[in-house]
Length: 174
Image (tube, rainbow, N blue to C red; front, side, top):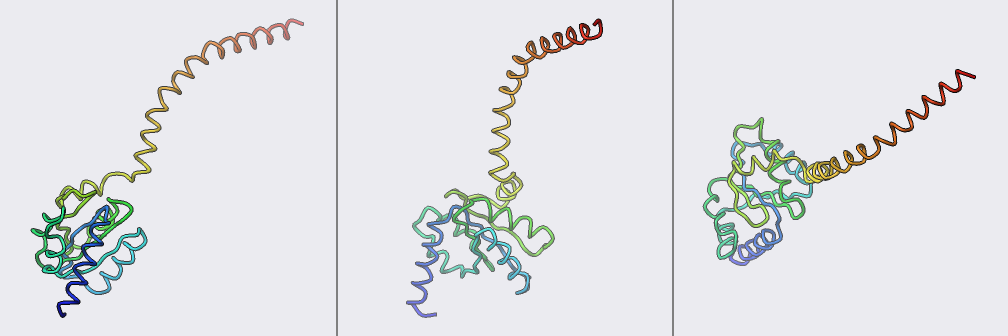
């Protein structure tokens, strides 16, 4: 790879990382080409890009950026999963996919510009999806209102029940 190709690769990697909402560094040591292809296909379904990076070029790409702390994790075979949409998608997919593969490990990552460790990525991966959390919050806000409506409707319901019983008794007596 000549200097021009290296400069192009560094610029492209820097551009990818600057637009990323979530990125995860992995160690793919011991994985077959078929497994990496399977992983890429799975990630692509969630709009996550997975590429194998050269550590020296990646270190140059993150140098003098907000992601400079990632350089410490750029050792050994490194794969990079980048998401521009869902910041937690790469960690969620990589975590679930890597459970049955002891040779596959997550090194570290970046979520919304913050460096996170492998343990923190695992914790984020176990959280429910954003839509589920929003639905739970909406339910939590709606529950007191439903209770209030039920309490306010109670007297009207009781009155209707009494009137129905009175009507039934009058119907029996005639």
